[in-house]
Structure formats: structure tokens, C-alpha cells
Image (cartoon, rainbow over all chains, first blue to last red; front, side, top):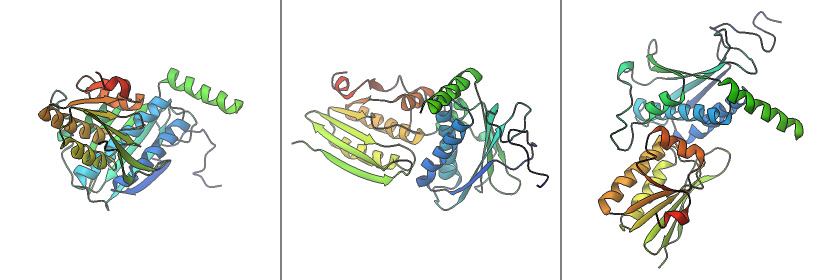
Amino acid sequence: MGDNVRNPGSCASAVDPPQIRLQLMSNPLYLSGARELVSAVAKRLGFADEACGKIALAVDEALCNVIRHGYGRDPNRPIWVSIWPVHECGCGGPDVHPGALKIVIEDEARQVDPSVIRSRDLEEIRPGGLGVHIIRAVMDEVKYEKRDNVGMRLTMIKRRREEADNDQAEGDRKESEGG
Amino acid sequence: MADNSTRPGFATGGSDSAFRVTVNNTGSAVVVLPSGEIDLNASPVLRQELKRVQTARPERLIVDLSGVPYMDSSGVATLVEAMQIARKNSTRLVLCGMQDKVRSIFEIARLDTVFTIAPDSQAAMTV
């Protein structure tokens, strides 16, 4: 066996490749697939239903922003979604119930100063401009940055709320055993 | 004469079928029933249909969201636009039948107090 193979549940190094890396084109048709993937993975990693829904919403909003603002609705540009479970020690690995989930969304769109990426004033009632607010509201950590050569990177972290998420996981386990 | 029509949109993918919008015209009220997830792929279909029914300036426009399990900010933006048109036309716009996940995005966007929201379509007729 190679040096990189670990026992299931062991910690991985912080520089490890993501556990999941999805490439999709910037076509709104694929949003539902990305949402379902992220939600199903979060659920499998022990997040409660409500948290899974919020993580999927944040990913949806982030992808929409890339499609609309980054790529100007061109449906044939690449977007990458990478997912790491994050352990208490801060590294990612194939643990059943990690402390958090890290999701990174990268694109090749035009670069913008991360400090100008912000939500509109919520007092101003008008269509649009809510995506960034929603992402920041539902995720625990959100960071926009420029990639090295081209495009932007959005890093989002959602922590498990132990009590709620463990209750849900226990309920799911019992349901599964009962069925 | 009642105008009851169903307009299929693009398939939204996911576990089931295409996004659809059904319109029921019941006297002074027009009831719009979207069915399926409302995201950036589906919201243009809803937007087009809302614009179409609003050209007739109905007294009351009810958007029944009971068949909508998910909505993102593009769906919310579509409804905000419909609200602005309704205000201009003196149309009473009422949202109803919101599932928890959909209500949650209105709360996050602090729009739950901006829209008139009724529990179901029957209540939406009188609120």
C-alpha cells in the first residue's frame, strides 16, 4: 500500500487534496445537481437537515454569483467546487463526523478586489444583491480572494452544532436500524 | 371566463421533473402556482409568467408556494420585482403556502415582513 493511504477516520494533512472536487460549467441547469451533492455529503457527515439546506443554499448563491457577475451568464465557463471535512485539529480527512465542512468555489472569471464584494443594504427593497448576504448569514466563515493567476476563490466553512447535528444523526441511525 | 393554464419551464434537474407554473383565474384574483425548485434556472420562467398575468392588473395576485420546496435569491428577486409592479398597479400581492426552507430565505433577507404572507390559498383570498 502506498504512503498516502490511511485508515478510515484518521486525520489527513491540511494540504491534502479535497475529498470531493466537482467541475461544472456555468450553466444554471446544473445548480440543482451541485446543491444535491453538497447537501447529501453534509448529511452523510452528520449535519442536521436544516444545516444541510443552508450549506446547499450558500453553494447555490455562490455559484449564481459566479455565473451572473463573474462570467456574465456565459454558460460554458468552468467552476470548481471542492469539499473537505475538517477535523477538530484543523485538517481535512475521511471522518464520519467531522467538526466542520470546508467548501471552496473557484472560477476563471475576472478578478475583483475582495473588499468590494458585499451585500446591498437590506433596507433598500429591490430585486437582487442578496447572494453575498445570504452566504455570510448561513456560513460560519466566508473568505473571498484572488487566485494566483486568474479567477476568484471563495472559501466557506460551516461548523457542526454538536447537539442539533448529533441528535439528527442519532435519529437517522435509529430510523435506519428500524427499517 | 376562467384562464387556467399550465406553462412548463426548463427542467431544473434534481430528483424530479420540470419546473412548472400553473395560473388559475378566479374572479378578481389570479392564483399563480409554481411547482418545483426556484433557482436561477427556473426563476426566469416564473418571472415571465408573473409579468404576463400582471399586465391585466388583477385586483389580487396570489402566489401559492406550496409546491416549491426550495428557493434561492433569484426567486426572491423575482417576487420582489412582482411586488413592485403590484404596488404600481394597486394589485394586492399575497404569498402563501410557504414551506419552512422557503420561509427561511425570506427571513434571512429580512423580507418576511415586507410581503403579505398567508398560511394557505384560502386565507390568501381574504387577507
